[in-house]
Length: 353
Length: 269
Image (cartoon, rainbow over all chains, first blue to last red; front, side, top):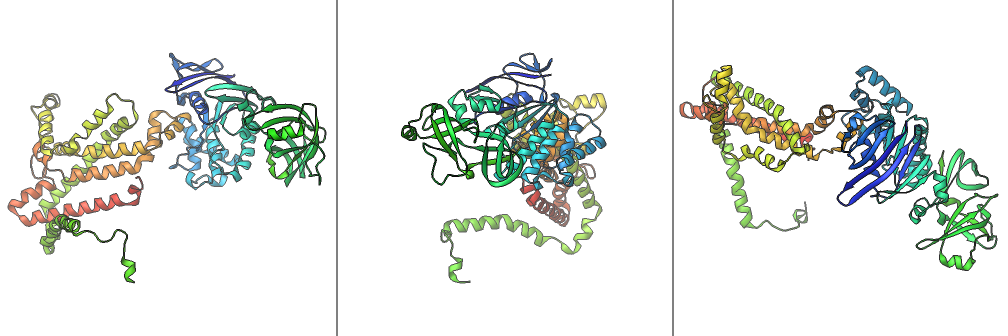
């Protein structure tokens, strides 16, 4: 059963009009800037906000179709992880997770047993009696996740699930969240303004701007062919999968690069297009991440020019570089031109995958 | 301490403000101190446990507690309605709820008598159908006290509800909880300090109720003579008893004030 949503919400100065679908086992990310209507979309699907027009249905089950049908939140098989988690402070972690089961009619004993098992799966078996305010940010996020998952919902909604975390824990929690989402059999809709969260966690991106879908597709597809300048800026990120061994990462698409901090196993590596420098000749001293590259495209943006490169076989097959118009003129860049691209190892972010 | 240590920004308080301020303070405190000074301390314990005083005290505590319970039962849902439901004319309803706050209690008593009295609009039916009449009974005292004290509870609870984040209720809804379950398990625990503060205020107001009580329930020792009524009564027959009763009411007021200043209540603000 696929979730289909044709979301139309009109409010004073804002109009949301977007269509999306989520298949079982699929993770769809709704990505867009603040104020694009992502949270409004999530609230409408959750049943916290009625549609003004359109329809939401799971298979043949209609959840919202104005003016006839509106199924309130407590009658939809959903789980929601809110941005700031909204854990109940007067209840322990265990009671928080058991809450949904109790509300849906499970007896007290079974609910507590199930909640205990859920908390154990996320490594919080020692924190059953802890109150939310005594949990760390990462722990609270895990409690919020299992609270949403404990009722085995058909649809899991995540509203900026990593936004409340500090940078040092985000890394770890993101990888962990990805693992849980892969294991979850239902449909997942993730709302985020962070392109990295979306690209690492989702199977499919739906990019929203001013309440409308501007592009939709697989993360790599969107990163490779952004359809609007906005999308290009948003997902303007070089992102690769690979296997790390020490400071060398063998990219799964061929080529390799050198990272600053040694690690091992499957990783995502990401760096902004501005981290790439281009040279006509092989640069002196030859930094580690230097690859011969061919220009495949040029795009004028507001203050920079985005250059598409093919750095295979030594480096990544698709490489984005942002350089100034002055440098474009100086290098006399044209498609098909051979260059040398260098990347500073310190600009690379590495994420376990 | 060096003289410099006592210097403050802003300099000295001008005499023209200081003098009335001190006078005002004395005006508030001297009568209470006078009450304590005049109290027959040596015979106080024996008088306190005398039949009359004990009876009035017991009745007062019973009626104030019952009135508070009634206020909680009716007032918390009313506060919820004012804070959460989409109600037409909500501002007007809120204003009407607070009328008993400023209304002279005697007027409240007269109004209750007209509606719930034996010949009253509703009272007549109660008498006719159930053979049940409120005026001049202990139940009447409870009704009079609840009428006067309920706004304190409603305002306090409504304030707490407005301060509470409604998104927690949304979170409960996404977990499958209906409105009643959400109210019991999420909303009520989160506003508990506000409810307690409101209940304490409400109880204190009910305990001190005089005007509405004497108008609606009369002054029948053992049935409707609460502490404030007993004080009034005793002033004419045995002033010492009046003083003893007053000291007890003063002590209760101080305890209530102390309770309200406790952290678990002030933490609400």
